Image 1 (tube, rainbow, N blue to C red):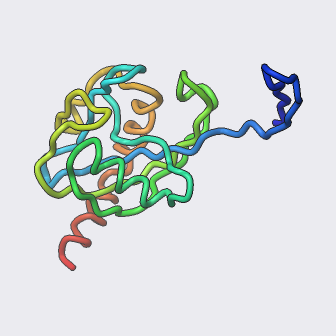
Image 2 (cartoon, one colour; image 1 turned 180 degrees about the horizontal axis):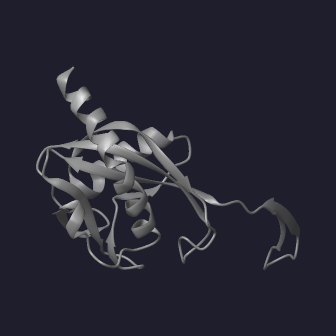
Length: 158
C-alpha cells in the first residue's frame, strides 16, 4: 500500500510503501521437560512464545536464535520452520507476519529482555490465554508434535 506523508515543517509530500513487519516466534522444546513460554513485560501482556522483530539485514533464522537467547537465556538448535501466520489482526500494535520455528533448547532458562517471567509447560497444561495468536499456533503445533519430537530425537542421536 502506497501512503503519502507530509513533512510537518515544510509540507513536502513523500510517498512510501506501508508493509507488514516481519517477526519470528520460537516453539522451544526443552530437553524432555516441556515447552518454554515467557510472560511478556510489555503490552500486550500475557504468556507467549519467545520471539520478536527481525532486524534489518538479519535472516529469519538468525532472528529466531537471537530472540530465543535474549528472552530465555537458552541456546537453541532450530529443527525447522513450522508455519507462517499473517492475519493482520494477530498483533494489536501493527500488522505483523510471523514465521514460527521449532527448536530444541539447551541450558538453564532464565527470563530476560522483554520477558518478565519464564516457565516450562507440559503440552497438556498450557495457560488458557496466550498473547497474540499463540494459542492457535500451539494448538496447531500440538496436532503434529509427535513428528517434531521424532525429528528432535533423530537430531539428538547425530
